[in-house]
Image (cartoon, rainbow, N blue to C red; front, side):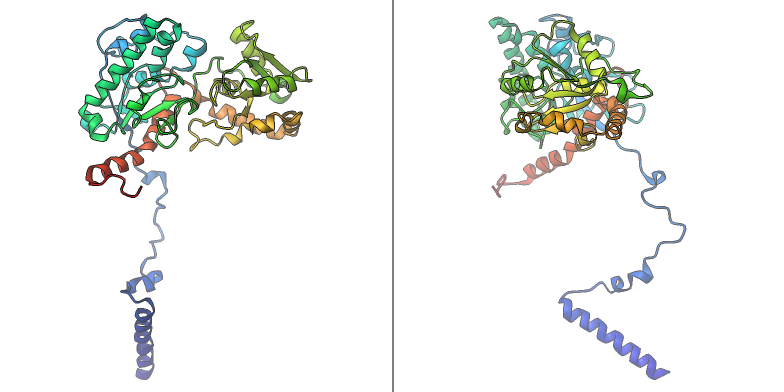
Length: 435
């Protein structure tokens, strides 16, 4: 027996030396016998169990105290001023239509931080009053409303007032020690209108912008790497009673479009679509004369159509996409450069159909593709739309999973890159040496 033990021991020693010789480095011998030393107990709880997961930590946000002229004062009237807004002085959101309703993310983000129950239950965001405990800093400047209130009126004096507000905000931020600490990288500034903050964006372009798309600014000023894409506020009302036993057959129109074809950037494309689609069976294409019937006509048209056409507007995106979503009308998106909200969490291919601008110009191509969508496939997309509609609702009081909640979560997703840049810049003697 002793000779057998000797042989086994010899083989073991040779195995160890052979391993050292082969690898040329120190070995953790325990790893060779992992099977015998690392088996979990039979009653171990999987680490993915919800019982073992800690609650998700909310995003801590410090909101600067800005006077009302920079935000809600504009809802009360041009040049209205007052002390920083509180929950007691927050005005209800007016029943705006058109552009003012579309570009309202600034109001809803501010309101979510003022909400009385903020921080009392599991939420995506918590307002903190100590800036040193903040993850990010929110700048409550209503740059979109400022543009619509002052700059978009064709009055030079009023336009200069919008420019003045932009300049004051840029100056205020650059003097802030918290802005200086991160060069503005951990600051959040809503700029949903494509022309909002247009003259001073480059002064604050390190911040996280909340935008509709990236059609106007240069990539060095605004881009998907650092910024957050927000949904437009939808103009039509959400289709709450969409519970027909057969929604496919109840929607008698195949494709619906209602809007202007005379646009600054994509006018030729829309005119081409009008030429291809107008007059076709089961298609409603109402161009230019959109004032007749107003929002009610658009609401009725979207709710009675299987597909809703969403060509690019003055920029790569348009409000029409979000009107289609809340109408549970499958969006048909024609845009080469569109970026979409929360796309790391939502797969738009599950409820939308995409065409390039060149594809859309082909005679009969869009119709042929839409007619190939089976009833089963369309119903699958329709159900998906109904399930995700709440992610595109701006509302007060805010609710978990609504548009503002999703946006704060998107801001939180930007933090690792922000922290990396801030920490590197604090210790580098030669910034960005690798370039």
